[in-house]
Amino acid sequence: MSSFIIEGGHTLSGEIRPQGAKNEALEVLSAVLLTDGEVTISNVPDILDIRNLIGLFKGMGVKVRECGKGCWTFRADELDLDYIESSEFVRLCAKLRGSVMIAGPLLARFGRVYFPKPGGDKIGRRRVDTHISGMENLGASQEYDYERKAYHLTAPEGLTGCYMLLDEASVTGTANIVMAASLAKGKTTIYNAACEPYVQQLCRLLCAMGARIEGIGSNLLTVYGVERLHGASHVILPDMIEVGSFIGMAALTRSSITIKDTSYENLGIIPEQFRRLGIRLEQRGDDIFVPAQESYVIDSFLDGSIMTIADAPWPGLTPDLLSVMLVVATQCRGSVLIHQKMFESRLFFVDKLIDMGAQIILCDPHRAVVIGHDHNFRLRAGKMLSPDIRAGIALLLAAMSAKGTSVIDNIEQIDRGYEDIDGRLNALGACIRRVEDQD
Image 1 (cartoon, rainbow, N blue to C red):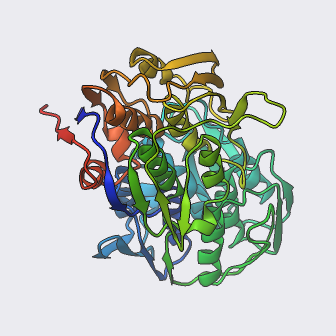
Image 2 (cartoon, rainbow, N blue to C red):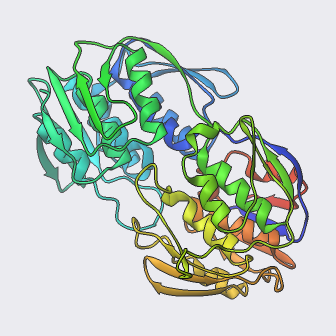
């Protein structure tokens, strides 16, 4: 288990560029399994989750070639179908969060797939109901394999398009169903579909591969199935979660930084939600400039009631940024209610912030009230364990603003989602040292 040693209190300055979007990368990389043609994807982040997914592809028989930094070419023309049905394959998929999205492509193309519950962060239940019911709507049969702890989906006659109303606007569920429907017979209508920019990006890649999809960007998608898809190329958007993390980092350290090439039009409500915490932002073309401020005053609602910041389906706030916003609020002036609706374990890292001196009341697994210190009291350094990707980056930012030297263990969780984060932050003036596991 590797660690970060962080010396807090350093003021940052300069420019930083967000990596390619992790969540988009997991979707569009899965789409390469839909065709025997060559697919080239650029701006792929060099993070642990992506490296593990590419390793899984290689084991499946996908021809993989790295063309340059962040650029990969894939050709899935000779897949090992015996391996894809093996217990070893199911075991590896169960450990990898992104493996959930290879089920739709494999089912649509080959008529069968094992579908284990996804691994990854320990942030609460990850339902797969939307994925499975979507595949069943398309004509797949499902049985649960108790020995392998996985769902076995089969469609020996192929999938057939239909109308379906999703039980939730699941991003990964929508991605899986759209990929499967692209090779189904006839027309598929998906209502209550997720419409995040990364789902839009997946749809655009599929269209470049020969799919026919209408309604991109809305919650009503219509997919006209085709017999086969061909190769294409695609560029991944910047990671909106990194953009938000860097905004929060500037505020916590009272620093002035410029975030380059943010794809601002795809950030949705994120900039405005940080402004509610009193953070001034300036859009400069496609960049965001965050000026240094001595104080950040949290807004109240018009009737004077306490500000509430909650996650919601796009174009609402992504739940992946609530951990960062909670930490930022500890150093603002005023109070805010953070409401994490989606995952019931994601706020449990706040006990580590309380140990550092933060004033937080954890109301229940989904809600926390933060009373800001207004930088009058600096957080204390501490020894912490990163429980998941987003809590990990939030704790790293807290340590960067704290008084003294902190240690964060289990940073593999942070590496799953953030590329060379210590190197990039040190280039801005942070003092973060990586200590590799000696075992």
